[in-house]
Image (cartoon, rainbow, N blue to C red):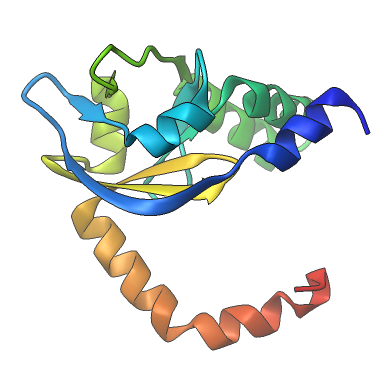
Length: 154
């Protein structure tokens, strides 16, 4: 097993936390998650109108996968542009806060209330309103979702 695969397996970003953005667009990341993020995490647009934060080590693995996408396919080019044009290496200040750049704040619909969700290899930042709608729908569809995952061995 190579060193990156080992690091990938060891990442455990889990849980759901609610925090508020301050007047300067800073958001406190829970201490439990900050430890896993390490130095120089990457913040970018995510799917479903959330933001993704990857630990730097996992971002490298994700980039390797992105770089294998076929340049000749428009959907692949568009996805890569979507993800990378919003990517920022971020600093976590001494109080555990990160700065959300205005374009990413606008994309995600973040206002004051935010939900921080650990999903294994990354953190997702959600507007509380968008998260509440998403999770309510996911809870209703959880049986159907689980059935669809059987082909992946889950």
